[in-house]
Length: 350
Image (cartoon, rainbow, N blue to C red):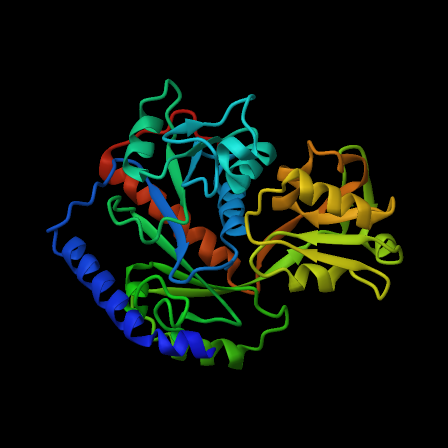
């Protein structure tokens, strides 16, 4: 914790008090939360910064989209549009934001929408001629105006919320007690070989309630990089001199996976919109080398002057253990909601 953050400690106390009062009002029904008659799964975190929400949403899409009509709803961080937008063939990263546009590009059988007002966004989705049967809320853990039926809370292995403090002294958006809303807590970005003993230590540190489940995942990098027209094995690209570029919250693991001693690494802020000046700077540095970037950055750069040199590395979230238990818990929640609401699934694939 740096000196400035220590000086701002009184403001962290005040911020924590304000968010606690807000949560109390929602918990007691003084402030209104809207619930919906279909399964709504919210994925989020207590802290600012990257905890791996995008690969976790993609995991849920893969789990559910062959069985149900899925829609994702995001705020659309740093997009240049306003209000509710449903992705279509005219959409791009500036209209949707990079992560929703990535969902739209990768998964042709889902609906992708953005709206800062999640209540309005869900209402608009349910008014479409093709109505979703399940809605995945991306980064909506603090959006209490919608009462999701199921909350998944993510926390990074190297930055657990139990070790953090409120903004601006720490990185927490709300107090640690907010974790109690989660049905499932996922510790993300773990080492692949995380021991059972270390998992037990983390369980104890997070102080789960008796009804909560905890899982441990790691970021699994693809064996190949991809461009508009080709793919190359990572084992081969590691031998080349190249430019590595990332505009994500925590780029070090991405760089470490690909780089050799001759590579240059360029880092930009998370969700960075690349200006003409940025593109010119990158172009000068490449000297015709390949540019490898993250999938999230690729969707913002693929229509730029760099496209002929541009490749991206896909990632996914992989469970260290008990993946089947996680899948079963999600599917049982959906089944229960459908039974409670009397919903029928004539077109469900078995």
